[in-house]
Amino acid sequence: MSAGLHVDVAGAGPPLVLLHGWAMHSGMWGPVAAALAPRFRVHAVDLPGHGHSAAVTPWTLDTVVGEVAAAFAGDDAPLTVVGWSLGGAVALRWALAAPQRIGRLALVCTTPCFVARPDWPDAMAGATLAQFGDELAVAYRLTLLRFLTLQMRGSDDGRATLAAMRAQLFARPDPAPAVLAAALAELAATDLRAAAPEIRQPALVVAGERDTLAPCAAGAWLARAMPDARFTAIAGAAHAPHLSHPAAFAAALDGFLDGCAATAGAG
Image (cartoon, rainbow, N blue to C red; front, side):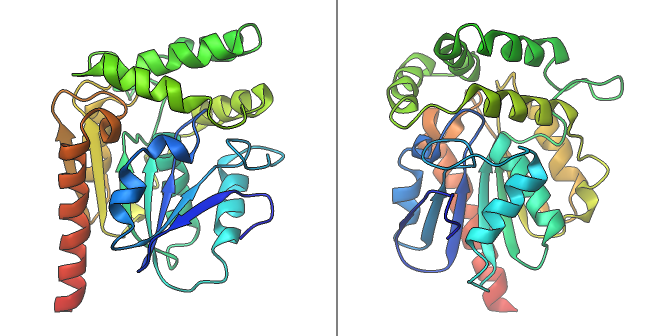
């Protein structure tokens, strides 16, 4: 493993990597890692500058991918990568940079382009993302708590899920405000739409039906753009379906993983 990257490892079997969202840490996957451990060697990564992981400079998707990829350089087995939100963007960039290393992708509440553009309406307004950056320097923890509230907006059982996320969020060291600001700037600038057709690995895109940060329509577009992808929308979920709707999320993920394994076995 990379000396600066914190990775919690559990289970046995083929390697599976979990990548969390902006301002979060790998503990935010909740019971997902434990549920996968009987079948996979699960590597729950704290992205650089988050949780227990050291930051990288500059903080870009490319430098983050380089740091995460280095942690798995000693293992040639194809990786299953499950990325949530920012983690999904990291997973997409990793698949583009090293297609031979990534065997399959599960992208949770992931969009190829986080900020709305004239030809891309299904995204967050640029002003909303910029507002987070402005508020980070003034009221760091209040800004993160507001971000959690946005993730749950409109979700069934949102209040209970929000309480659980709040309890978990501050269980590890706070990310430096400079890291969070750099990550926001990277999200604002990233547009992977043109590259999406180059991602040929089997992929699953899971969207929350009520997600306002990575709208469901953006996930559906991403699944159509990739040559070997399927799409699942979880009814009643917002931006954290693995936490708010664990049974539906597990059914979608298990169906994808089992389907890929069956296809590989038939081949």
